[in-house]
Length: 240
Image (cartoon, rainbow, N blue to C red; front, side, top):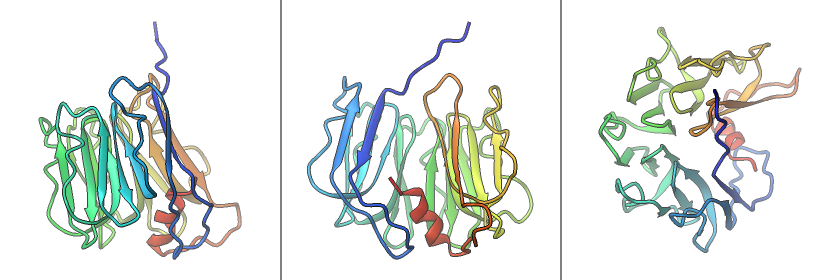
């Protein structure tokens, strides 16, 4: 018998909708839901990005520094010093891209999910125990737990503008100018069955905790011109 697991933690940034690549939304955080580890006790201040794992959260302040709160049994909220442009949270690990493009990871590393590859990066995503990142040249790489092939990035020249990770599956939007979405990994509930038509996707995310391990995507309106600049896609992901 399937038992549905409801989302336990919700966070939102109170920011205006921004539609240009050069705009950066920032605002205070609010949180609600289960709070047994203080995961909805959001810090004060203004933020540009936030990510949540199973029982912890990590956010980027407007000055670029990181802050973490919630459960810390694996060191997942022991954030590094410096300034950052992107952040992601797995079940018990965290990842962030420094202002110079370098990628860092911390927290649980039993499955090598924080053993980040060298290079510079523009985007990062975290699954339950695996990680994905887009290099500065657009190449998508994956590492960590691979029991369902969730880090087996599609073969060939695969460049991406956005990536998402669920519990045991992965998703990425190709930089083909058409917004084509690829998905791979566990498919017990159809979570890698990309909906038709496979075009015009602009954002993607995978759920960590759900009996159906769901994926969510967004598209450009039909007939709209799809920009090829990756910064537009990254901004699209952060729209409230």
